[in-house]
View 1 (cartoon, rainbow, N blue to C red):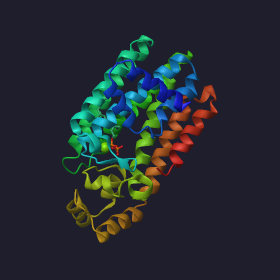
View 2 (view 1 turned 135 degrees about the horizontal axis):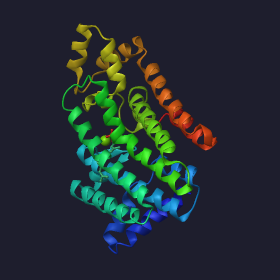
View 3 (view 1 turned 90 degrees about the vertical axis):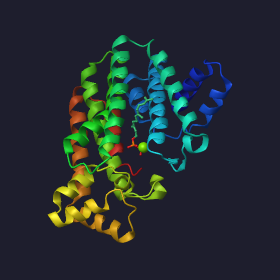
Length: 299
Ligand code: FPP
Ligand code: MG
């Protein structure tokens, strides 16, 4: 199934009629989890329209990651070289623009409410990335801002995927939008926890990387809340620094003292439960499994 989506995306690119673009497209890693596509196919089953929707959403997602790696100056993605590392920032930005606008031209042939919801999600995605960049400039201790940012950056496109698939299938779009939004929030919290608990072999980036990048994610917010003034100061002095093994151990010690990881996982599970409540009446086991797998994943 996921191979079909890759084929669909490739055919959209081939239709542009420029061989060099096809060859760059083939170099973009297709190794992602395709969470959004799985969700769409789970809700809307397999049809020409659902595959087109899944391809549109994946192209938007890939475009956003191409741009994100340029913005983050990231040289690796999923344990391999990032596209910008291999071909430079300019090509990465333009390939992002091509994928993104190609997705929009295909989106126009889907039902209007789908086109509106997905376009709006892309606007939110961009706002989310902007908030992420702004919040990473100085130590953010405001949890509301963190949640707004992860809603925009991550949950909005997952929300739009679930909504759109439901519309194609004739379900109540708002129920599935709520499912998707809460799934997306849980997903990002688990991502932020994995930055603490995982290691570079599994994740493709070193642990505690977010803090060095200026990202005060939920685990760090809980840690900061728990710290006494002196430790708060020490924590802030480590912000955006390359941490040595003592400093990493100190952060991890404080996190276990305040049971930060457990609390974050509980919070992600709460969002997972809210997601399931929203679609309870449809009794769809596949959507329950998506929530479970997403919370239990280790990468
Ligand atoms: C990854 O965040 C980034 C996103 C999920 C959204 C990025 C959105 C944009 C760049 C704007 C939209 C642009 C287009 C063309 C649609 P991260 O850096 O926290 O995650 P990472 O560890 O996977 O890099
Ligand atoms: Mg990034």
